[in-house]
Length: 50
Image 1 (cartoon, rainbow, N blue to C red):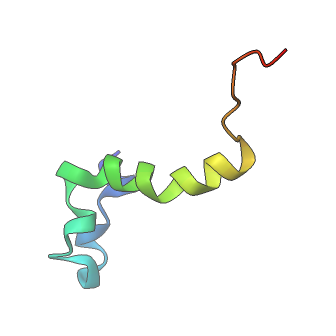
Image 2 (cartoon, helix red, strand yellow):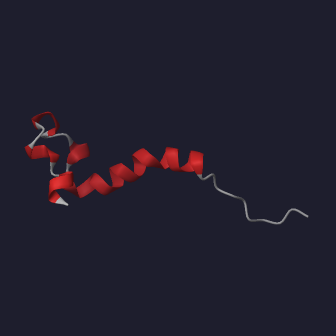
């Protein structure tokens, strides 16, 4: 996993950018893809309106 997410050593332009720090990386990825996921899988209202 370090090779996949360890871009800081290969990309100096992300050094110091808080979006690429390990502590928040998973949360940042979730935030970035949330809108796309909701577009393809919209939330369904489970209430019965009969």
